[in-house]
Length: 217
Image (cartoon, rainbow, N blue to C red; front, side):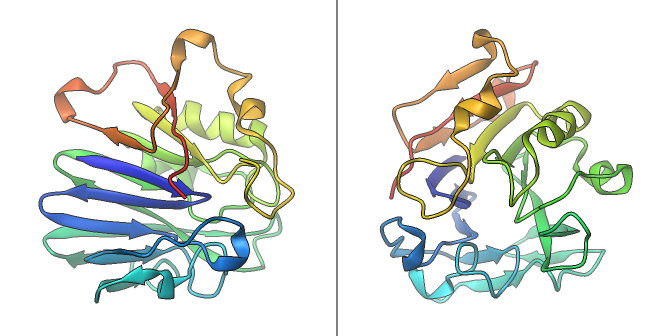
């Protein structure tokens, strides 16, 4: 399986002959256009210019909106997609959205969507067993960095890929990734000079690793 970080919260996940694009950003984000094809497009919500620019994804993908996924999930191309309902603000009143999770080639992936508050036990429980966590690492308006650290500790993913942080391109007042990384020893951090990570179930690390990718756009 291959994971490519386009930038911000947008990823391409490839495996089992399927291309899945997640949370594509729009032209106002500051990143270059994605302009690639997908078989499946997941969006944590359908009306946020930083997370749901479907027009930037080519082809005729099946579109899944995190706000609309039923508790039992939705099966597309033989893959079960489920989502944890969360909100974009601390008061859990504004912009409900979904944290998608699914399994591909035996590897369970979770995307933190546009989460803006600490996770409670009911929200963490479905994410336990996650192998790869695509984590909101830039602080408010998404989850505060100390709350993210606690979530990572509770979920215990094998790999964390930071996203949604300040790269010098994105037009948002968010923190750089080093603010998130500061809580972890150097031996648990890998910085890749590439936007892609190839993953196999049998080679996943035993202890949580933070893998920092270079944005593709």
